[in-house]
Length: 120
Image 1 (cartoon, one colour):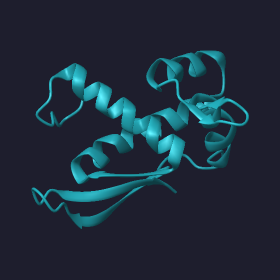
Image 2 (spheres, one colour; image 1 turned 180 degrees about the vertical axis):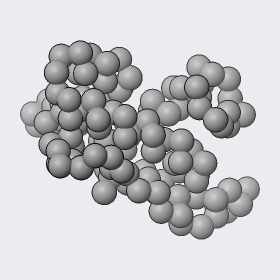
Image 3 (cartoon, one colour; image 1 turned 30 degrees about the horizontal axis):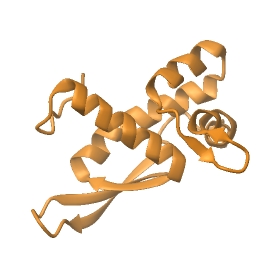
């Protein structure tokens, strides 16, 4: 499905991207390796596009991908609700390019190039 394998089998790779996509929507910004950030960009953009559609089919498709995590403890709002209620309406007038990858340097242990992926 994606170009890079990251030294993982398909199930582990999909779970990793699913977890990272959930974190980007939850926190707005995540630091990871540059290659993971570049692959994650298309996943998050697709989820935001589903959020902009806003119909039941789009909500179910996004729910099948995003992890069921509570985004706000006070209200009990989940990440899926945050995507459809807060994040997607912010990009209603934009046709794409919802995320940005910013290179930050190298990791100490193995000198892997690191980057932030953030919602613009």
